[in-house]
Length: 434
Image 1 (cartoon, rainbow, N blue to C red):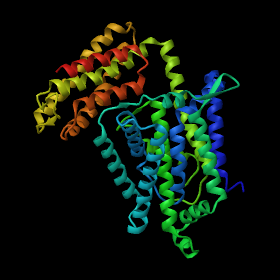
Image 2: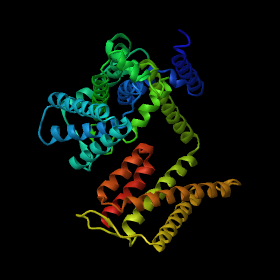
Image 3: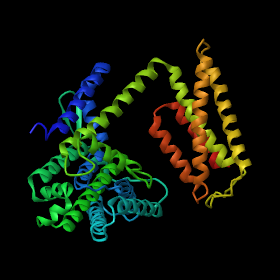
Image 4: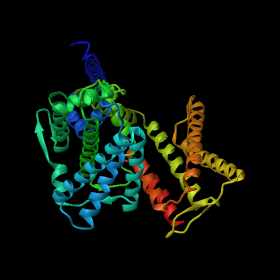
């Protein structure tokens, strides 16, 4: 019994030790408000991870869940905003679409004997592309039902508020535990993950089970997309990028073997909790350090100013791009001399940023080494972005989409700080005016 549950016990032990460590660093972690916020912020990830657990238990993988979130958000924003459909009707509609898509992928995986990695990767690209066809821009969702659902919460002792989204995630986990350990479907999933050939010889229909597994995964991913749209009040084609990796990480951290056949849904819950704990600890640490040392705050501001300034220079000033505001951007072939100009431009912008840096930071003995360290770090980062953007602009892309992607990145990284917002707004205005 102990050997069977050892991975789960280790995961729980890691979570407890991590929580105690966070508690020693920041006593505020003892507040139920923090715990409830962790549940709310990671509700969509927890829901996806439950579905991913069943997929990995069966020996498969599902890379399409992030794109399912994006499609769900964009679809809901479109039908609710443009067509006036009630969310109470839109939610079941998109859930049926998500389940049907998962069933189709499961059928292809079993019928064609193509690895799940390939099929779900194709599904990921397909749904992401459809999301872009619906809208390249973020679409706000303004509806009274969304306002009600996002504010719905129950007070618990200690000042915390358990939101409806967090409660829904816990309900999905409980249902997932029941499905995995108390139903025939759960036994079939474990059997297929342990040995699909033996499961076939035992009379288990691998086709119907595989279809149901991927239907469950994409269905829960669609539900997570609904939760995410309520959380953000918007639909965006870039939403959910990389979420599939977070979900897989949560499942594996929770003790589920990637080869299948071994694992628990409860362990996945603690895997999600560990990721949420780390993220919250980082947020606590950043805020504490920024409050104590204002110079670190300024380093962060200059870092993002350099990146946004480079994007402004690469898009608006470089002669290698021809762009009309009403048309898509098309990149001209990039010769070696253009790459050299780009590198020169990066160095100029970095030097400009650190001219500001030198005026902001109080002189001390460590400033020279610190400036050089930050200079090298930013230049390396900007060179990587330069290479990526050069490849990106060989394809068609819309300038507004670039602005939104930059805004999204800055907002996630630290949009609460006034200086970052100010620097970004200035760069955005310059990009739009050119």
